[in-house]
Length: 452
Image (cartoon, rainbow, N blue to C red; front, side):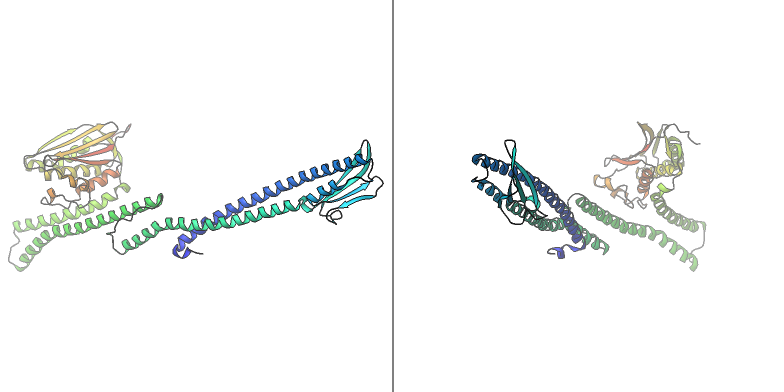
């Protein structure tokens, strides 16, 4: 069919499906129309036959009365009425003699004709019999022409409707298929590694437009993930380069006998090994945090108790930088994995200690707010730039303030993954130059006994 070559396989199937539905609907309407028309015409024909019979009976009885018998009676009105409906008429006198026969010859003897017989009564005496035979189906030639023309009109209209349905199906299908083709081409481009795509122009109707927008979002996410991966590889390579170079140089010096394995040299080597170990541990922590929702060992825990433990473990780090570390810990019971929550608070405190200046301040707060338990960790560091606030929880992201602080930039992404796995949310409040505050909200557990 015309237009299918440009529609493709899916488009052709859609167009054919549309046309098939239209054909079924049109055929149903046509059949119902013809059926109703046939019933109406048949009913009309039966009514016409009864009226014609009554009119001819009246005309013949009046003719008999006018002459006092059949001799010299005017029978022409009966002939005209019979001719008008295409019926054969026969008038039989009281003695059985045929007085009149007119109309199409043979209808009275045809088994297919519709026959009617009516007694003619003048006064109280029967003066004759009227025999009528109407055409097969009881329709006059005019009625037959009307029915034929109606059937032809319905059939022609059905054919025209199918053609219009096909044209509309092709047009509509092209509109539907166009965004799908663009999505397919874009998917092939992404598969080939070309993710820097222009906007797909999400102009498809309804769900197709939503699909286009979702695809654009997915491509943008892929691009962002790719950039983060490249950045992560560069950051890890940079972080690994220094300890590996130090280890290589020191070990070569030991092997060549240039340096002696004294405590200072061994301590330096040990420090570099620890640095490598921390980096590997950070990467492993991120991987486990992404799967934490599948491995959480939850039970009721008091956040104040967990936070106190994490704060005690890191108190020495704050003291080494003369940081004023304050705690405000109110009981707040949540349904959580205490080890993972300890990890979250430790990451936040470590991050705060890294950015807080010497003799600065860090504040740890645990409180309840309506149906949520809230953890806040704030510091007096440089804060986060407004253009970096949306990226601060992304993996391997290190803002301008953190580029000279070391680390791999995954601590806060681990925090976010673990908090989300617990059904909570994490947010940032920051003002450049006035520090930052990380806020975590977790659902409170009610009616639960806290484990020690």
